[in-house]
Length: 394
Image: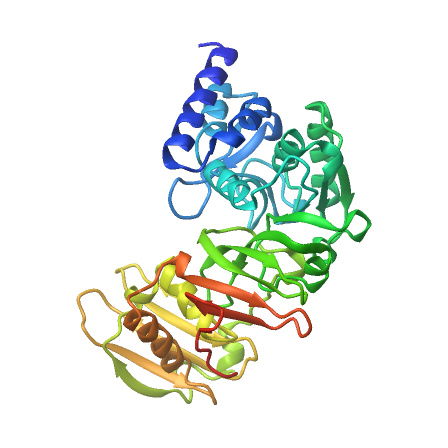
């Protein structure tokens, strides 16, 4: 099969799969066809998995063009940069820092954005340039501004976008600041996970305008939120699904090592022992992690795994005052807990999980978020803005 035949077969095949899943709506189909994904993927990339996270081995278009085209027209994300560009070669780096996003996620978020023909759109995170080109095809390049913090990514994205025939406003800068020169915007699309929706960005959106962004909790779990800007400058809206994006660079968090929590003493140090019937396995999926994260502040988990299938779930706080461990062993119904510090982190996580469980384990679509226009305070809610999620104190 020639490259052209493979490309055409894969292009139509991916379109069919995305339409069947509901991700690709009829209004975006012309842009999908006019802006082929292959134009925005470098020769060397690492394909992701259809479920979960993680990357496969590198694929080089020059060495295996058929495998490259199959990956491009699969519904997976494609990592295009590791370690902020400090990594080279075909091996995997430590942390993926740029990708061409999973097509079903791209078009689901574009559908949530609900652009009109004359919408003025700000994109935060140009990445490989595919989103900016799709938006340019849909609303016209004169209505699109895209901001990218990484100079090399911005340069290569510009080359790809302009080679495809589009000339939107492309800016090298910190997306946390938005791009005031192009404001006011009707729509903002964020392609990096936020732990805080920047007030500066909200202020650049007209009343009634929409912001679509991945929102990540400190605990873990992440969902796409669709916020509408109100007259008072606040932004309010529901979550529309799950997501797993790289963090906005300004909002990356550096975790302290567990030894700093133990004060140089061996585990369990001064930890107080107890037992729990709540299995760490019950709280480890993306949705319960998200629900826990909306209700807790400054708590994050880490699993120390062992060869026999057991593991220790570590909980720590960002203030480096408290920690907890829960030892999971397959087949057990009770699990050993140690907690230390002014906060009883396992107790907090348990209360948050049980609250979510008692509410019927609500999914993404029942949660929402309000960002106050004056204070910038973020308040997650369930079903309605008048019903905030219970959050434990720091």
